[in-house]
Image 1 (cartoon, rainbow, N blue to C red):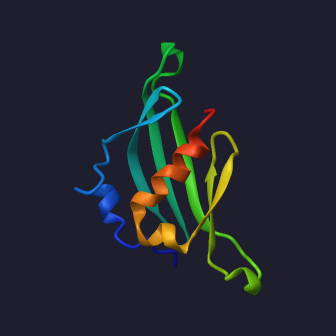
Image 2: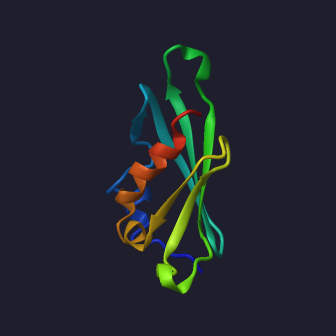
Image 3: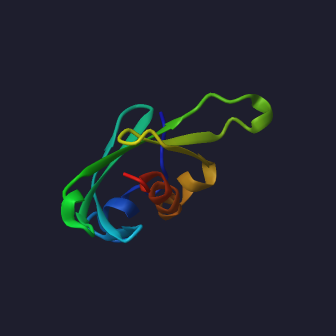
Length: 112
């Protein structure tokens, strides 16, 4: 089972679900976090864009473990944007402090 330590920090007081994030001049909010046995799914919604044509579009990002060779440590995970197909690798340290996941997630959202 994939576990992000202190995931409640993203859901709760440490990082409110309705907190806004800025990507390339657009404002996004984290609206939902779901989990299955081996995947976390984060849903972001664009609430402010210039021009306004892109408002209320959503981005879904999956976080899952990827198989790696033992030499690489076996602790690599992939953030994959279902919407635009971009992905980014993160390591176990990102799962120990959920706020550190936000930066890589924003990089994956760029271009949506």
